[in-house]
Length: 304
Image 1 (tube, rainbow, N blue to C red):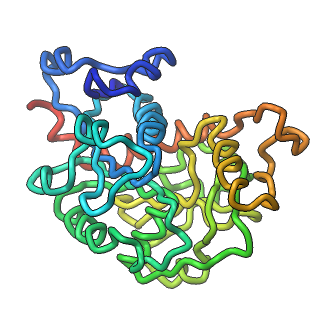
Image 2 (cartoon, rainbow, N blue to C red):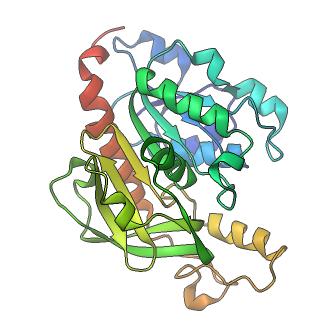
Image 3 (cartoon, helix red, strand yellow):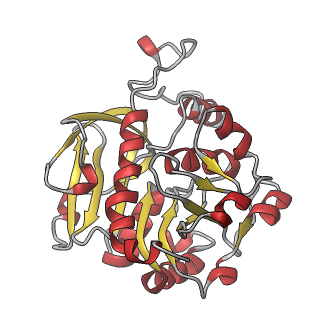
């Protein structure tokens, strides 16, 4: 899928080197179709890293995608320069009258706080409410998924005894849902969190279906019956070295921290991790774009 992003975005050079299909703004204007409009609310600390990871996954099917990067107005980012945000991001007030075909909300390193204690919670709930009328399909990742489940259904998160970090085996629980079309019966995905969501809480909500889970990591993928909302408790977008970087960061605060599970070969942090989740990540995002986004808004794509 050609991804339409500004020429000045740092991710552009990285993705071009990886042969991810990008399209210039000039070329996009000459095409006789409108792109699928995807907004990404990036709550991760190193926004340039996360935006590259997500753009990589959005560039994997035949249609054109136009991405709008969004950040919170009520939170000051400590790990992303103000200039980067000014050049490449907008706040929700700038786009509040626009319609989007898809909306992605990332994870955030705030799991150990109660939802209402997060400094931008009030703004986030306003964004959730805005998305109900302005977004066709939403995709929530990790804490973003927990926050959306809590806001919409009152589903709580539960503190784990220790951080869940690593690459875990998952199983598909149904073969009939288009979101998991082409999935293997068993597949791998990264997790990195201090909290979890319980099956018993999800099963009380008739509108939600658990599509994949893990014996070690718990619920992984669930969706509403109409497919308009998808919740992923892990981080399929993570790069090969993301968990290593997080582990090294966290060790500075906790030298007894356990190493990520099933990540380093032989549990040796000096060995390079082997990527086992990339094909699943690409397929998950491809299915979401094709079946949850495109199928809902296809008639409006035929012309500008």
